[in-house]
Image (tube, rainbow over all chains, first blue to last red; front, top):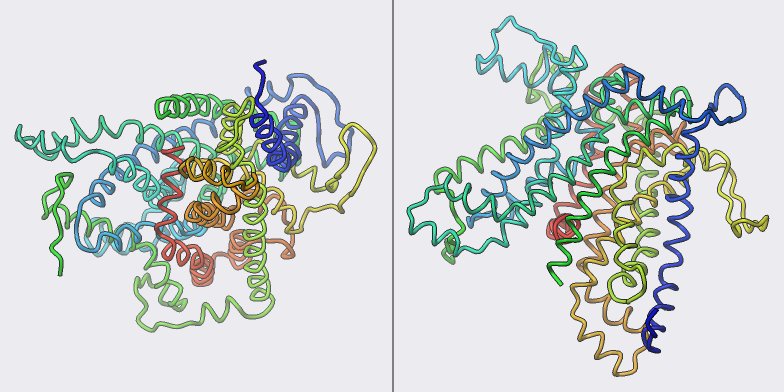
Length: 298
Length: 299
């Protein structure tokens, strides 16, 4: 190790002093629990049957991976994620393009789109559930009024779990598109106007400009926003609890059910770890990108 | 009035721009307006499917705050406020120091630890929820590790707001560190060096130079953390069993179950619960935009 100057040594001790509270807290309430849940995932550990925890090897994982409910919920979570994130990206991009223009009252519009994002997630789920109610829900009333739906038709959109998952996606899109918009707006602001001016000389129209300037320039922001949203959406819980009441509608929901309804702590831990591994892969991709980004800046 | 300067990044023609903006406004506001309108409707009108009440009434709000249910709802509001503020304060006080170390000081494994913190921030909370439950059931022990020396053993924390404060801190602290270290990095180094030359100590430079200059960042982080904790539902539903510690989202969900979907009551409760974050984000709009962009794009 290279010899440190007096100043550098001082820096190091000061850094350690500043970091100690964080390290103590995070080790106690984050790192240790994660480790513990890894250990328990190899144990038969049931809070309700009163038996002592005992080591059972990979049985919890075998149980998880052969459980059709687990796969069903995982597929639904992936489905939900792809559906909401792709639509959020498209809508978010267009809203960001709109709000990036110069017009009177721009600040009001920019502040307005935060309302859905600021509303409580659970309330958002309930609100959309109310909108989708058969007979007296707003969507049916509006569709009847606009003659988009035959007057006697009274569909129950939330009757099946698969249908509910899609409508929960709609609720999520309404709430989280603003977040996407804000992230992309930040990216748009760094694109220089000269690029557009140059393309104007070539007589490029709107779509051409978006396709050959905006999207390539915005790619880093798009990727970061997408990764953040994918990780957020994959673990969705609150919206689905009020929409479906069916634990197999999302992995998180299923895990929570194992843990806090039946108190199978070992199985819940194994399940949490299995789905966490999916996300961990994404996190690694994200971190590598961030690191690259950081290296380029310095 | 000043003429609005067109910029060359304005790529959408004016007519399409305003069509788009109107659609955006309607889609954004309509569900929210419907929430408010429903909360002001009586039962008959809700069942008839009237979108806008013909005879607006505050009856749902009166019911919401009346009797035992009302007391419970108010208590849940109070719990939410307490939990959100306590968590935010604790994570900010601890996290700001760490963020400063990450942003300003050189020590071994600095970048690696910073990215470990980032990984903690994005790991799903379901992966720590089971051990935290057991931890809270047994009570937290503070002592010297690997010895039997115990300074303090807390009573079981399940069904107290402290369980939520501790659990939320696990999520908020990495977030605060990541966001704040980004802000600290944007403060010019020269200012700090000048202060050091003037003989200001390490703590002095931090408190007198860096922190005051990072006020917008501190505000953004504070508001962002506050909103996140107000919204949290999963931990809250796992760790609380009675109204002693239920927060607003859990209370609203319970409310609905017991009254077999009283939509009037739900919309009234939902509106009240949504009001604080919406008002906060309207007033601190600029900070929130900063927070979102700094947290995601800049790093």
